[in-house]
Structure formats: C-alpha cells, structure tokens
Length: 181
Image (cartoon, rainbow, N blue to C red):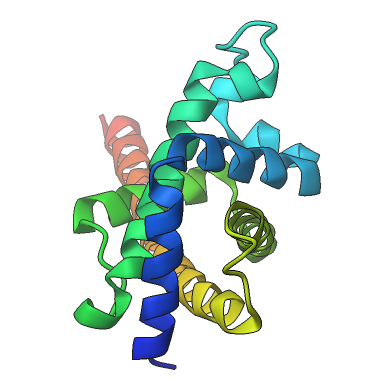
C-alpha cells in the first residue's frame, strides 16, 4: 500500500509537534517497550552488561541515547516516505540494523511490540491530534520501516550462513591437508 498525501500530512504534523520533546518521548517509547515485553531488556548488550550501574532505566545514559537515535530515525523515515516512495535510511545504517537485529535474535513478534509501543507513545505525546487516521498513517510508516529492516535481516542471516559454510569448508580443507601431510 502506498503512503497517501493525507497520511504524510498527519505524520508530518505530529512529528513537528513531538520534535522539540523528542528526547523525553523517545525514552517513554523504550520504557513502553520494556513495559510490554520486560524480557526485551536482555536484547540490549548495554543493559545486560549493566553499563548504567544501578540507575533506574529512565536514567540509563546509554538507553536514553539509543532511544533517541531509534525514535528520531523512525520518525524521520516516516516523514520522507511519500516523497521518496520508500523508507529512507542510509544503506549502511540499514545493513547495520539488519545485522544487529539478527545478532540480537529479533523476531517478528518483537516488531509488533515495538509497533504497539510506538503507537502508544505517539498517541500519548499528541493526544489532541490522535485519530484513527493518524494511527493508520503511523502504522503504515512503521510497517514499511519494519519491512526494510526485516529484509536486511534476511540478507544478514544469509550472509552469516554463507560465512559459516565457507569457514566449515576451509576447516575441512585444512583437515584434509593436515591428514595428507
């Protein structure tokens, strides 16, 4: 499904309203993810390694920085969707996202949790603007971003599988060479 002019307007208007408070909203977004799926915390190495010490999640410096990066990237890609025709995230960033998500064990269900958290967060950030049409616009934008990340995850997984096959083949060749020697 394409991204209509009306959807674009709703996304642009709401992002403009949220932009100045994006740090606070981004943190709420991630806290909502962890509220829905507490086990998701284990998917983030900086939370597993307790890099923030005993600080509550809302004060965790690496979480806040990560949340801001993710939230702004999601919103900015959504605002460009109609003009560009697809998700615009730098190719290198998209490849890195794919590889990182594969390594973390991200599955389709995780994308649904993030989608719910994103929609809840935007609804709470701009309640006076929130309508079923705005929800549909953000759903479409998120679904397209998620599809782009999932595609890169497939590529990363295929690449990892090929690398593993190559490594196994090299080990087998080395073993044969050692046996002959």
